[in-house]
Amino acid sequence: MNLTYWIVVSILIVVALIIIIPPLLRKSEIESADSDQRNINIAKERAKDLKNQLQTGNLSQHQFDEQYAELELTLGDDLDIEQTQIHSASQGRWAIPIIAICIPLFSVPIYYSLGEPDALIKAEIKRPLNATNGKGAQDINTMVMQLAKRLKQDPSNAKDWILLGRSFKYLKQYKLAANSFAKAYAILGDDPEILLPYADSLAMVNNGRISGKPAELVFKALEKSPNDTTALWLAGMAKAEQRDFSQALKYWQKLLGILPKDSDSYKEVEQLIASIQPRTDQLTAEIKKEEILGGNAKPILAAKIQVQVDIAANIKTTLNANDTIFIYAKALTGPPMPLAIIRKKVSDLPLKVTLDDNMAMMPSMKLSNFKAVKVVARVSKSGTAMPQAGDYIGSLALPERSESQNVTIMINEKI
Image 1 (cartoon, rainbow, N blue to C red):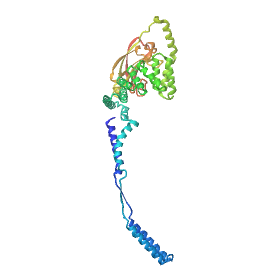
Image 2 (cartoon, rainbow, N blue to C red):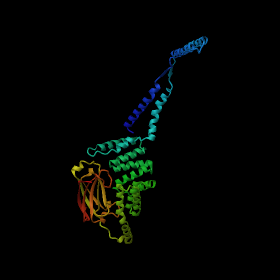
Image 3 (cartoon, helix red, strand yellow):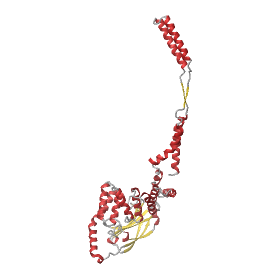
């Protein structure tokens, strides 16, 4: 909740009171009609009628005199009655203090219960970053400071910890995001709202690897939400890292049944399944062979590629310093899954990294298992591992990879 919220609430409450209270304060004077003039007019009409009846012979002179005298007597009695009555209507004024107290007292708690108190903050978090002058990042940083201040006063507010984690994740500060989600997780426990973002942030910190704590959180989320698409995707990745490919395929095949067939995500999962399925039998055979040979198996020489990465100057000026760079090697022909991958930021450029078997996403998909590879450096403005339109990329094909070699990649193309 910020100052803008309280200003808007105060204005709305004042407007409501201005609309409701003045009519209740206003006196409504009700005057009866002038009964004198009314009674005189009625008497004149009656007298005229009596004269007409006398002239036409419907009344005798004696009857006329009696009725005319009675008319005069009745008119005299009516004129003795008080003519004007003023009624001051004060009905409803007793409700004014009740309304003045109840509207401010109950409107805010009702909004807390039925509304969205953090709507302003969430709207600001979703505001896209301004890539040229960093104004969007400044806005998010300001909001992070506000959230941190609030959490210092109330560290038990799980919603604020989640908002802070999402803010850091938006800024690609994954370590800080994971720490914030950890605070929310300590308060909420195994709540589906926190399990997956916490797991995803931990995986980002671990260069995309899901094994360990991230996998534990993912499977807890999957138990509570068996059809959650993000949970199924991450669960498949976790099982693939554990070399349990049959279970990974089950998760991804279930995910295919949920995703729209014309979506990009559907195609990505199809490619992932296609890259893993043909190797399942081969990997199973390799495992059995290793079990049979034991320590007599010939070790595979580790592969290593040292990559120097830089970016074209005209492109760098359009990027945010916190934009993510993925540097990875993949098979030149074959499965699209990276054989080794590392995550950096635009602010780290120019940089030099080493890709080796220790960075493999799965034990069976190692750099040393492929002779022909392609080294890629890609700037992802969204921070996601899958290439998207608008990303910038540079690559180099190595048809004959050596055991250890140096390459230079210039990021100079837009996807």
